[in-house]
Length: 192
Image (tube, rainbow, N blue to C red; front, side, top):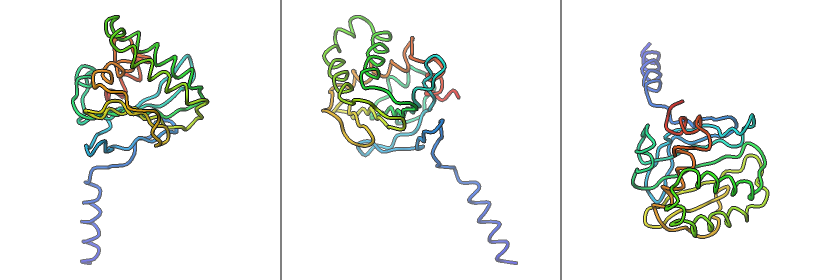
């Protein structure tokens, strides 16, 4: 009888523990927490980028703490990570074109001029990807004091692009006033 009672208590304790399972979005999994430069980041939200009727990629935004407004997400200090998992094959050229288009739609002319060299560097890096297959994971990570690091399936690509301000301007692709997908923006901000 004591064994049964202990089992019930243990089962109740396990049930009361917070779940740390990955979040599933389509075929992509996003961990609840990750580490960047020794700093823990939490999954702020995740969703799907849809173009016309096609699922293009799933994306998850990792921040030092959960926020629900674009302003707080963009101004959050510390490390950040945008994880993108392709849900269809894409060329590096199409991916780069979409990034540049989204960047230009969500930043002022002055910011575009200020960051043009870094935007060109990011675009040129993406062009080296060639054809990126469905299931590929691309991480765009902001490391404080270092800048933007890009990795594909865990392998670093290119060199870091310096500047926390550039990363903030890049995040506007998804979180700005004219995001690439408004439903994805809502999801990244924890809306659904």
